[in-house]
Amino acid sequence: MKVQAPAHTAQDRLTSYFWSGESIRSRSVSGAVLSGTLDVPPPPARLVADWQRDTAQRLALAPGDVEALPLARARMRWPDYRRCVQAVSDWTGALGLPAMLASCDVALMACRGAKYHHDGAQYGAAAFCNLFLGEDRGQDLHFPGTGHRIPLVRGTAVIFDTGQPHGVIARGSGGFGAGDFPADRDCMQVFLTWELPVEDAHVACALRIAFDIDPSTALRLEEEQVWRNGALASVCPDSGRWRQAAG
Image 1 (tube, rainbow, N blue to C red):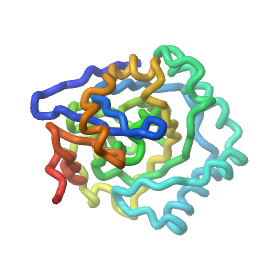
Image 2 (image 1 turned 180 degrees about the horizontal axis):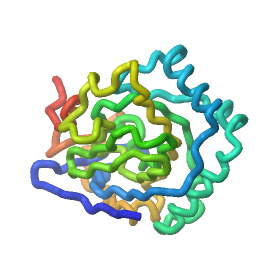
Image 3 (image 1 turned 60 degrees about the horizontal axis):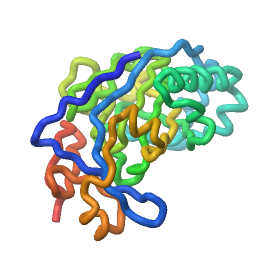
Image 4 (image 1 turned 180 degrees about the vertical axis):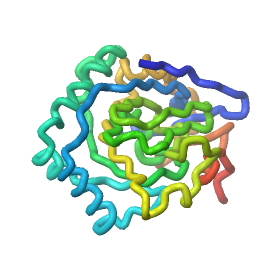
């Protein structure tokens, strides 16, 4: 297991404004990335074939997009699903996050690479815990704001703040390029993802998140947002760099 510490700079003072009950609350955006490689079996070949058909036909998955696959249907054809969940549960327990997964929302996702983005405008109250299920296809999970690059192989497990920009890019590249994920090559990544509540004391401690760092701004907002250096910002999908939000 690796716990990679944040590489903070004065230029990247990030604040997440997220729903806490009926009100917006502020918090820091963690630069910590927790990662490990777990011993999980490969999904059955017929299930992988289902996923490939779904991404090609139903989702028409384009390079850079991240879309949901039907988890309930997959579980019926996935004898080792519980084993995969147990491996993640054991890992999170070793990180000091006991009995987390059973009470957290879980989804099955697919991508052919992923453009740089953050998820703080929808999931600001959560950290993501991802388990990647495919073989090594020469791709990395990249966090440009912190410099972390995590090779994606079967069993790669990662916990990170939803407000931290991230993308799935070709290994050795400096950014996202659609040409790195051609239709005639198997570039698909499938992963399970859990939403861990950041207000849980164990999650906040593991990611070193501070709360109520800007309560005055939080009081006047009506939706979840991520700000950089005191202003709303967006992420360049190709480079992962922060840029001032339009308007």
